[in-house]
Length: 83
Length: 226
Image (tube, rainbow over all chains, first blue to last red; front, side, top):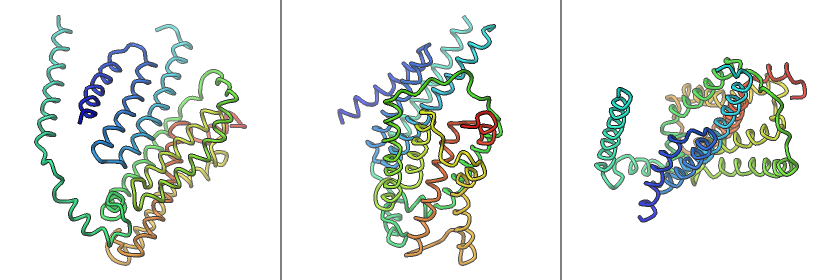
C-alpha cells in the first residue's frame, strides 16, 4: 500500500519532468524510466503479461526508436543549419 | 495574454479529464466480477492453463489474428515510406559491446523460447516472446551486426508474414470443420502452440525491422555488406 502511495506520485512527477524539460535526450531517458515504473504498476495491478510486454516494448523498443529519431533529427539540423 | 488564457484553459481541461478518470476508476467494483468466473469454468477445454493465454489464443483468437495483421500492416507502412539512409558515419562498436552482444543475443533467444513455452501456464506467450526477440534484433543492429535473414529480402518478408499465414491457415481449417477459430481439447493445445510459435518469430522480425526502418532491398543497394 505504501509502495503504491509512493509509486503513483512518482509517475506523475516523472511525466511532468519529461514533458517540461527542453533537452530531448533527458526527455527520452525519463520516458524509458517512466516505462519501467509503469511495469511496476502493471505488476501491482496483477497483470504480469502486460508488465512483460511493457518492459520489452514500452521501455526497450520505444526507447530505442526515440533515441534513433533524435539522432536523425540532430543530424538533419546539422546538415541544414539554416533554420 | 492569449497564450496564458490558452494554457490555463488546456490545463483546466486536462485536470477535469484527470478527475473524471479518477472518479471512473474509483467507482469500479473492487472485486473482479463476471468474466473471470466464466473463463475459469471454460479453462479446462481451452488447451492451456493460463487464463490470459486462453482468452487471447482461444476464446478471442479472432482479435489476436487481427492484431498480428495490424503489426504486419505497420511494417508495410513503414517500409513504403522509403526512409533515408542513416546520415553520417556510425560510431564504432566498442570491444565490450561487441563481446556483450555475442553473449546476450543467444541468451535472449533462449528467454524468448522460454516465455513462449511458459505462456501456456504462466505469464508469457507469443507477444512477450516476440518482443524479446525484437529487442535482440535491435541489439544486433546497434552493434552493427546484420539481422538474421536480412541478406535475402524475400526470406525476411516470409519470416515476417509467417505468423499471419499460419494463423490464417489454422483459421481456414477450423472454418471448414466447424466455426471460425473454434478448437477444443487436445487439438487446441497443439494448434495454440503452433500459432504462438509462428507469431513470436514474426513479431520479433517485425519489431526489429521497424527499428531498422528501411526495407532490406534498399539496404542491400546502398551497403552490400549491410
